[in-house]
Image (cartoon, rainbow over all chains, first blue to last red; front, side):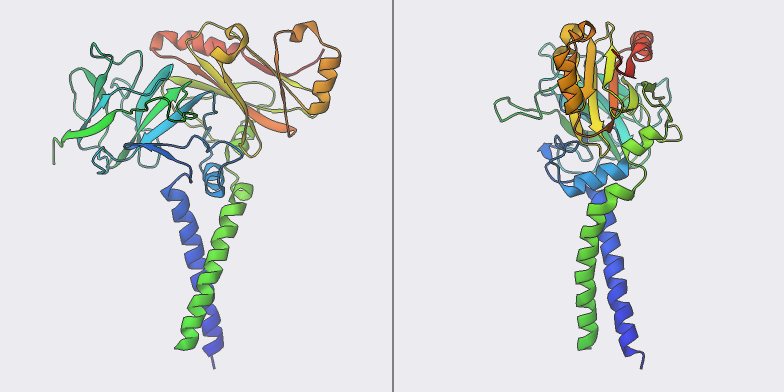
Length: 195
Length: 181
């Protein structure tokens, strides 16, 4: 007697349950299509434009961030290291190499939810193209670690997984058609002090 | 048993439809997209410098070296003019429409003499401005605004702490006003 209502309820539960969960998880998983990935670094050069896909539009409306315009810069984020493992703030990483051509770049770490890391004001929680110490060939090595390091140190807090954000300001990278050799710095794990 | 499978199948089709509807309509009802947040500052027609900590609207300087100011504006009553000058290492400006689609962006190297002087106007207002050129707009960049409302984001770079004051003055003295001749 309750067969038909039960079946209708089943269909509705499946529709709303899977429909909502899949939408939310799709928006959490990625910013949308049209990513350019250089090693572990991922950027979305089209995410702020009219031509971007509906997922990117929904994502940016939900995140409410002030995105970078085409002439402003391009923001790369890395949630994995160069071997594909998730970045963990208990470990020490070396960011080594050079950035693609840009007038300026900044580097800082965020939590896995894109929130600021909140390291103390006395710790070097961010670095940029002017303050980084370079080798004679202008490449650099930045140690990302929760414990103090010599040379370039980017301080992190132990918050579990984290992301690195590298912003290239006034860069031709987004519109590059392969004429410029795009090399992003490598992220190499050098050890986990406590693990 | 077969009817249960059929019900699940119908549910899956419904889920797919619902997924598409949610993704397509989400931008209209989130209420926390960037434009709503800019409007939530209750500051129209002037650049509002953001703090390092997120305020009630959730907008903040995300990048530790970039100071950001936002300005909601409308070209309904007349063109909007953006002016800023100062010797700082880098600044950039981007104009978004209400749906956060980029309309125009520039930086200090693409500006005249490194100073920001931009006029956003509707196509009719632009024709009017070009017919009777005003001397004060001789150096201005004029850009067509497809919609009436939008917001501007001005970013200024402070590579070291010593630039902090210069950059703060740059943002404080920048203006985003309706243009009157």
